[in-house]
Image 1: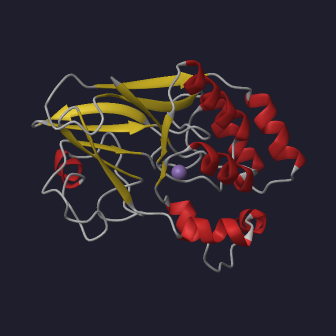
Image 2: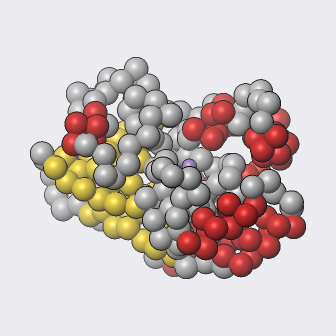
Image 3: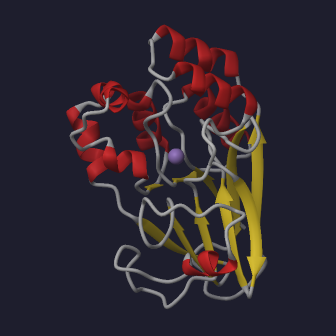
Length: 243
Ligand SMILES: [Mn+2]
């Protein structure tokens, strides 16, 4: 059996990222894929990019990775942008939209938010119709397959696995800014990698406790904007807005 650890939405939270990487390492998993949003919201985006580049075999682009490379009038975005080295900016710009893999005879498609766009957000409580659209190929995913059997994504910071109409949709949750529960979240996909014959497959959601106090201390020391909202999200696992 092969295992792929799927991490997403690190958002510059290094204590959370380190805790997740230690857990992955303890399980002896060497293949790590990242579903985007390395930077923003949290304080240490540049560092997150460096670590993720070092340890992940596959990295796809998130919405933050996209808009952070563009000019902006927002002082909050400018603060996060200032951390970004020219090299990392180019790296973020170069990231692909999605990654397709075969696992235990299933076509698995991985991307950040939805097949349609980095900016179309699908929540676990959205309609079946919206979820089925996640399996449609698009200009962005490419047309390698008519439809995948499994889709894995990030973006909403909510970990879940749902099966319907012969399809499985999962979300790895967020490493650095979970909005469902306060532990760092990631997923493990287990099966026979790149094997066309159908065999057993597993999707596991992992929740890792980490030093939230340390994460808060770093954000405070760096004088990060919107620090109070950030701290509230880290400590409660609840979104700051109305959603
Ligand atoms: Mn995100």
